[in-house]
Image 1: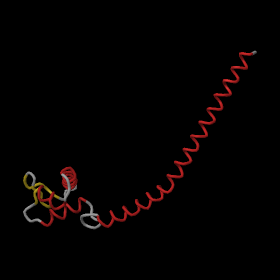
Image 2: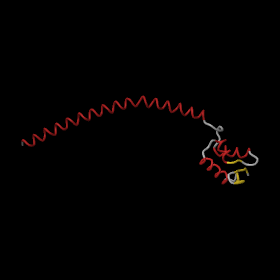
Image 3: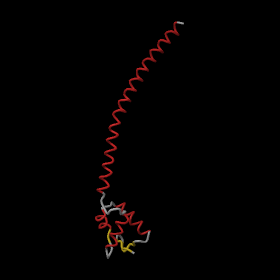
Length: 121
C-alpha cells in the first residue's frame, strides 16, 4: 500500500512539472505569434512595394516576350546577326538566347545562315 502511495506522489509531482512546462511553452508561443503579426503586415507591404518597383523597372520592351525581342533584332539586320551581338542587345544569358533561337527556328521564323549567324526567313 505504501508503495502505491509513493508511486502516486511521484506521478503527481511529474504531472505538476509537466503542466508548468506546458504553461511556459504556451506563453512563449503566444509571444511569438504576437511578434509575427506586425512583421507579417510589414512584409506584405514590402512585397507590394517590390512588385510595383519590379513592374516599373522591367528591362526590355514593354509587354514583349524574349522571342519577340530576339526576332526584332534579327529582322532589323540585313546580313544576319551573330550570337554575341544578340547577347549584347538583349542582355540575355547564353541558355535563354539558345532556347529562344531554337524555338524561332522550329517555328520557321528564322534560319541559320552560317554557324552562329541567324537571318529572318
